[in-house]
Length: 71
Image (cartoon, rainbow, N blue to C red):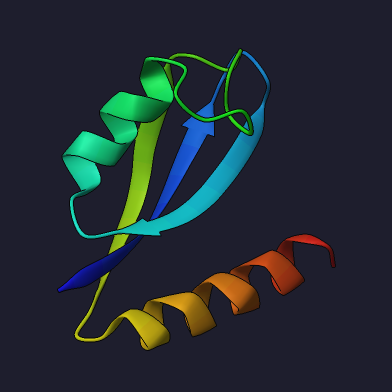
C-alpha cells in the first residue's frame, strides 16, 4: 500500500503533502528535520492519510492536491 499524507505546521501556518509506504516513519523524519522542504516547521502534525493500492495513484493525488492549493 501507498499513502498520501498531509501534515500541518502551526509554526509556519502551512500544510505539506507527501506520499510514502510508512506514514509514521515519514512524519517522524519531517519532525527530525530530514526534509529541506519542511525543516524549520517542526512540530508537524498529521492531518490526513489517504490509502492507495498502487504508487502511481498516490502520485496522481499529489499532483491534484498541489494544483488545488494554488487556487
